[in-house]
Length: 126
Ligand code: HEC
Image 1 (cartoon, helix red, strand yellow):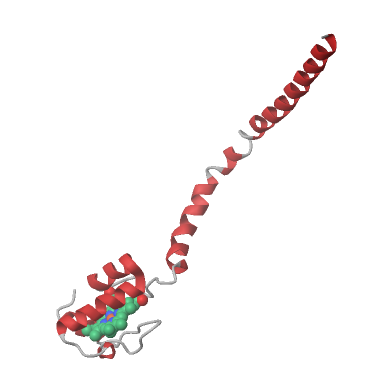
Image 2 (image 1 turned 90 degrees about the vertical axis):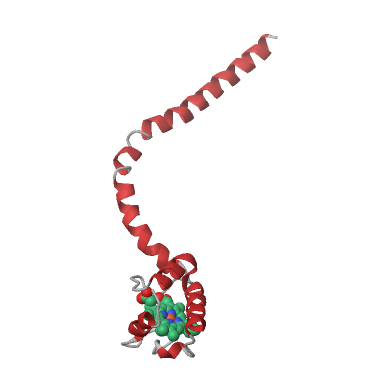
């Protein structure tokens, strides 16, 4: 019995030590480590994240500033595939025969002709 008791009390002491060192470590570091870092981190991460997100999307539109609601909304919704679909629907609606009426180049950049936007608005696009 005494042996058992001794054994278990040593066990308890060892466990207590183990817990004490484990529990003792984080509180010692926690206030000193993250405290000086925390105010910096949100400031450093926030400006970096938004510019990375759109360019990381393989479907993202090339334009980032839009002159038309149609394309802006389509790009926001589904990137270039959605913009293409919107343009096709627009052309069909306005009976325009070719993308090249307004675009000097198509995929991947969809360069506009100098009067591309003009033609778009004249055709009734917004
Ligand atoms: C009537 C003129 C017109 C025609 C025809 C036209 N587009 Fe466009 N397209 C535009 C204009 C103007 C923009 C730019 C919109 C803006 O800046 O808000 C644009 C933008 C786009 C974009 C977005 C590009 C990007 O990544 O930012 C895609 C994709 C596109 N057009 C595809 C097409 C396709 C495909 C066709 C043929 C099916 C087509 N367009 C026909 C006028 C036209």
